[in-house]
Length: 389
Image 1 (tube, rainbow, N blue to C red):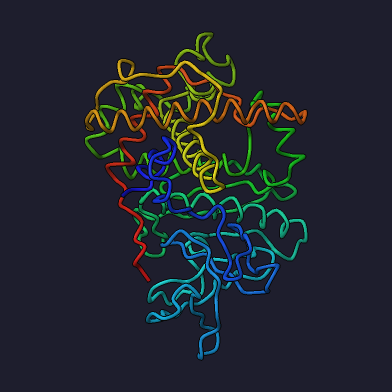
Image 2 (spheres, helix red, strand yellow):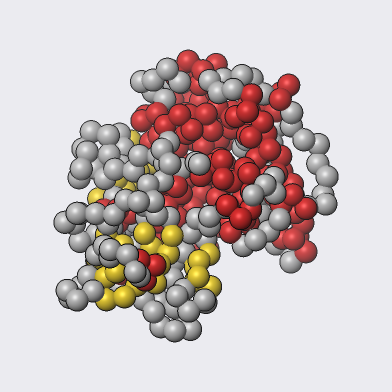
């Protein structure tokens, strides 16, 4: 069963005993709760490692060979050997395992890095740490969705890479963006004060490092999954013609702002800029929704018992694409549970005097676009290979 299908069945309260947590919270060998970024259990001191292909955090035991480790979960079975990522130590503090016959000293997530900041500068090290935490969460989710995550070192033409940069005195500003498989992130965005200034000046309701990663990954997967495929025309029908001048569209957006009726048709004001940005924003929201629902389920929240009533989307509002009625109903169950959960989360945030966790409103148009993103992911994704090394 796919990650998405597990998610939907659990949100409906069906066969929760079959639902497998996917990395948000796990249990150490001693029973202590351990979390996605933990490197060691605080109760028993066991070393921990995240297995990217299994989508889980495991207690580790040292193998007889120096520098190699076994999973405690493999006790009584043939034990595979793993290395820990070379970026285990600060500042990256990566807890991922190097899997398979990979000769690289880095795990899959860290192998995506093409450029990292100058770590001799203490502030850079702190910002890079926060950047890596967000990036690992993105990569883990992409793998759970079954999407291809291949470093450019393995595939220079279609692989994914990251440049983590910071503006230096006298240099041009670092612009976050994507081009030809390379995602550039300005690590100043990992500084909460800088990010909040940018959020306010750009009139954005939401701005996070993880949000940047998810948005830019949408541009990458447009190139991989849409641009040269049969999905291009359905995407143009919903998102608009991507052949319109991108630079002119950006200029118009920043000079004139979004159209007055953007809330009726787009998930965010920036999505109204250009079809590419509409796709990337919608893609990011699909990742927001699936990961947050997954976290709620990992912690045992019974979403089918939420008492808040909202007006549900129904199949009459959902255009038929490649998938059948069963898939449409699963998607509708997912998106309607999300509307309920996000509404509750927003109320909880307000009770603490905080901004809404999800300051967006889904409309029929944005829901249809989300379904198209879901359909593209479902057609491209493969079930996570839990048996892989």
